[in-house]
Length: 284
Image (cartoon, rainbow, N blue to C red; front, side, top):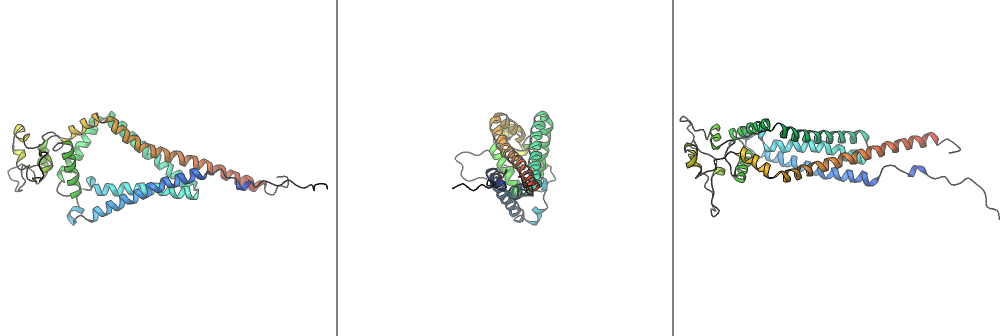
C-alpha cells in the first residue's frame, strides 16, 4: 500500500528559547540572597536607631553606624530588587539598571582604592578628620562609643594622633575650667590591661592626659590609632586584597550574568518577531 504523501510535520519553533533557565534563575537566586541580606541590614540599623535615647537621635549622624547600615541596606535593596524582578520577568530595563548600578558601584570602589593609594596623605588627613569628629561625639552615641572602644582595644592605641586628642571631647577636656569629673582622662579602652585581669576598671584612664608621655605610657596606650591603622594595613595587604577581591567577585558575576541574560532576551525578542512575520507565509 502506497504511503500517503503529505506535508512534513512542522517543527514548533516557538518552543525554542534563547533564554537559558540556568542563567535566569542563577541571577535570580544570586540577587535574592543579597536582597535578604539588605533587609537584615536595614532592620538592624532601624532597630539600633530606635533603641537610642532622644538625645542620641540628634547625635552626629555622619559617624553613626546605624545610619550607615540603613543607607547601605537601602542601596543594596534597590539594586538587588531590580536584579530579582528583572531576571524573573525577563525585563531588559530593570536588568540594565541593575547592571549599570553594579558597574558604578564597582568603579567607585576601584577609584576610591586608587585615589586612596595615590593621595595617601590626603586620605590620611580625611581619616584623621573622621576620627577627631568621632572623638568629639564619643559620649553622644552608644554605638559610636562601642566602635571606638573596640578599635582602641584591638589596635592598642589611644586617640587619633596621640592620647592628647581626647582633650577635644568636652568631658575629657583638660582645661582648668572644665567641671567634668573625667577632666584630663581617657576612655578605659586606652588602658593597659593585664592578661590575668578579669574585671575592667572603667576609671583606669583618670587623669592620664595630665601625665607626661613616659608616665602615661605605664598606664595607657600613648600611640595614636592612625599610625597603628597604617601599620596594620601595610602588614596585612594580602588580607585586604583578599577582602577587596571577595567584594569585587560578586559584583563582576552579577554584571556578567545580567549582560548574558540581556543579550539572550534580545535574541529571543528577535526570534519572536521573526516568527510573527513568517507565520502567515504558506511556504514557511
